[in-house]
Length: 193
Image (tube, rainbow, N blue to C red; front, side, top):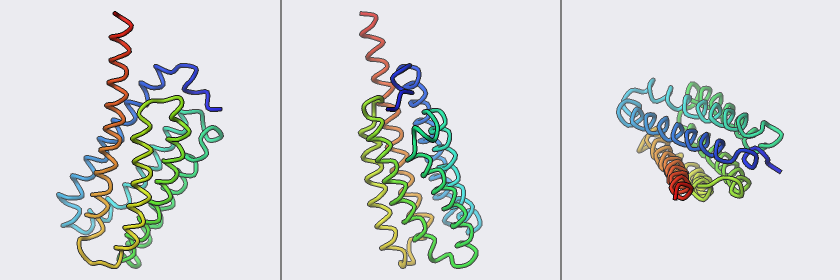
């Protein structure tokens, strides 16, 4: 059983809210850079395609560590390694055959989406706003399949497709953070009444 949220629920939910806000903020900045520069300057687009899975690996590592470690969070542990592997694969693919980078992101989106879905399902009994993370995980898996299907299409470039995917993910993280914030405010008002 995952005890990290049951022992100090308000404190951990506060941390989860900040974590979701940070994930949303990073993704929104990344998306803005992808659309403003990444689709026009190949080197910037390539760097962004490597940075995105590295950020995901780091974010999952921090969340896993904060949430009881690897043993309590095997889905996040796998996600850390999968995201790091995708960053390495993207680096190689971008130097060898950039046309298959969307295939790499497609496989990753399916895998990481299923892992996020499993994490949210496990967490839903102990933390609020997991319905948005469940939807996000499922949407990620579907988007990954679409990436693989669309990988051979030349336009729009992979960075634009991945940026659209990241933007939707940012919205889910933002909704989760706001949902937690509203829940905390409601509890605060109820406790003072």
